Length: 80
Image (tube, rainbow, N blue to C red; front, side):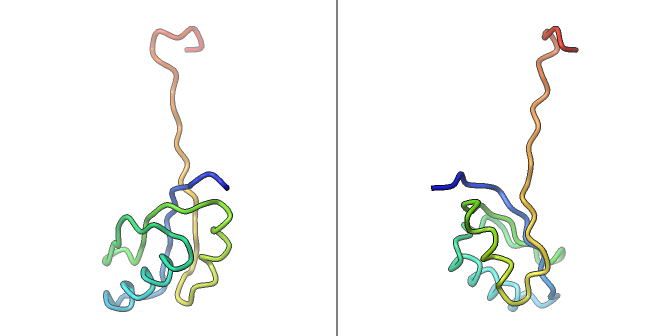
């Protein structure tokens, strides 16, 4: 099983009801929907890395981008 990734899905619509339908389809393709941002036409959530490709096949999806996190070393670390 692949590791779960946080993703941001850009959607081609400005209609909230259509956005909700797309979110439902994305959840059927493995996305655990966390939020639907109507004004940004964006859906966020988590899914397995192996499901990333199937999310782009949903009609209305423009792009699926994996979120990345960064951790800086503590201020007391010698690297700084």
